Length: 172
Image (cartoon, rainbow, N blue to C red; front, side, top):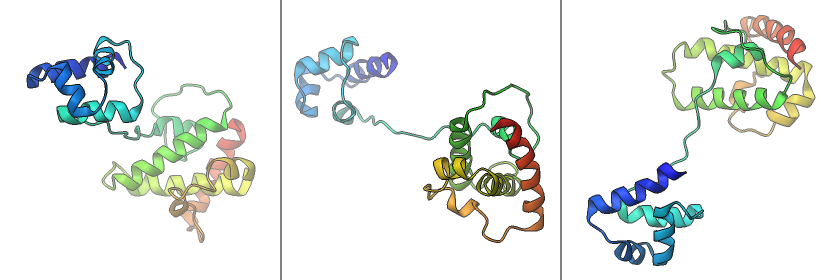
C-alpha cells in the first residue's frame, strides 16, 4: 500500500498542489492527506478515491489472469507446462475456474480460446456430475460460469470430461 500512498504525494507535487488545496478539493481533512502521504493512514477506499480524483488518478480493481497450468494440474484436460504439486483444496479449484471463465469471457482472443473453452466446459461437467458438493459450493451460483456448464455436451466435451474426472478424483 505504501507505493500507492507514495504516489499521492508524487502526483500532488507534480501538479503543484499543496496538501491544503488537495484536502479542500477532495473534501477530506488536511490531517488525512498528511497521514496518507506519510504512510501513517489506513484510508477507506472512498477516502482514497476522493483524494486521488483531483490528481487525475483512480483505483481500478482488475481480475488477475487465470493460472492455466494450475488448472491443468487440478483437472482441466489440457497439458500443463509445469508440475508443481497442490494441496487438496477445492477453494483453489473454484478460484481458478472462476478466473479462467472471466478471462475467456473478457478476452475472446486468448490464445487457444476454443480449446480452453471446451476444456473448461469438460472440467465443469466433471465437477457437476461427479463432485456435486464442490460444484454447489463454487460453481452453481456464479453467472459467469453458467455459459460454460454444457446442457448438451458434445462428444469431445464428454471425452474431455472423463479425463477431468480421473484427474479430479486424485485431487479432490
